[in-house]
Amino acid sequence: MLRMDPNAWAAGFAAGQRGEACGACPYASTSAQALAWVAGFIEGKASRAANPAGGRGET
Image 1 (spheres, rainbow, N blue to C red):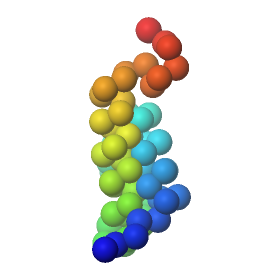
Image 2 (cartoon, rainbow, N blue to C red):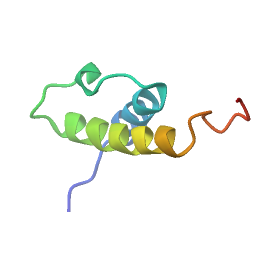
Image 3 (cartoon, rainbow, N blue to C red):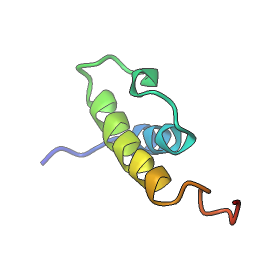
Image 4 (cartoon, rainbow, N blue to C red):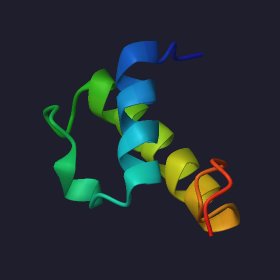
């Protein structure tokens, strides 16, 4: 089992929620940090799609 870097995951999640492009990943594409960032990005993007207001009550 691969342990993901929680800081990289959180940064990717935040980027996904903000609507940034996946290419914004700051890590080398073959690094474990990049894998964690992209995994977080996917989750953040899904969260954004499910709740476009970001859960802040905005309309």
